[in-house]
Image 1 (cartoon, rainbow, N blue to C red):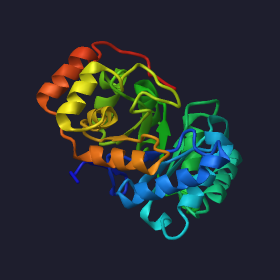
Image 2: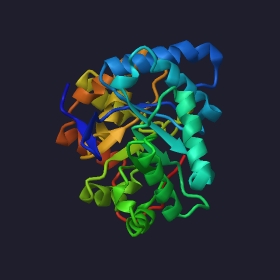
Image 3: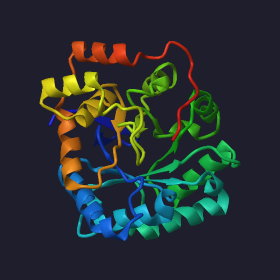
Image 4: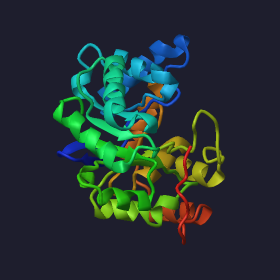
Length: 285
């Protein structure tokens, strides 16, 4: 496996492809398949698992909790996210404790603010530090915050401890490359890319069927999805967290770590989906 990785605060080194869980936990009939996929991913080295209290109203966390039984928790880097309306004071403590119960663990490796809400960033930072002191989380970060939000966060006392920004990023949504991504790279702050295949339970933007993507995939003896993942993680400090609800998909994702796109490949993709030349509001899904 190629040495593609990101490093979170505290020198937590993780492979540049993790496992997302959006839309997991919604159907009891697929639960065992999802559990098996997460375990297979961990065994293949995709040790970061990203979930949230929002996903299936806690159902995804329960699936992850089941998958981590039998010794898998010690191998995993566990990430969850708190609703913005729970991201301050006693609400945040209670929300974190509820996530820990569903996940059947004592501590989260990383806890994220899912998006900005009515709690101030100062209140959120304060309660995140409290959760660290209580031993419930090891580090904290944010999600869906644009550059201006991140700069504001850096002016909050303790805000510099933010370990990551998780944002939507894929070949057809490159807005972060204009300012947010370079800023995060300057801060040595990993970016977690959700929906790296431009999918969120449904096909979007036609990337998987695109002829340019298909041609490059054929040249590499790879799938279109693997090319899209390799494209996302070509950037320094960027991790992709695709959802994979089957063992076969997890195996495909893990193999994408070994794909090296050539300068010609990248030029063709840039021609089809150009990098932004101006500020674009942060894309969200």
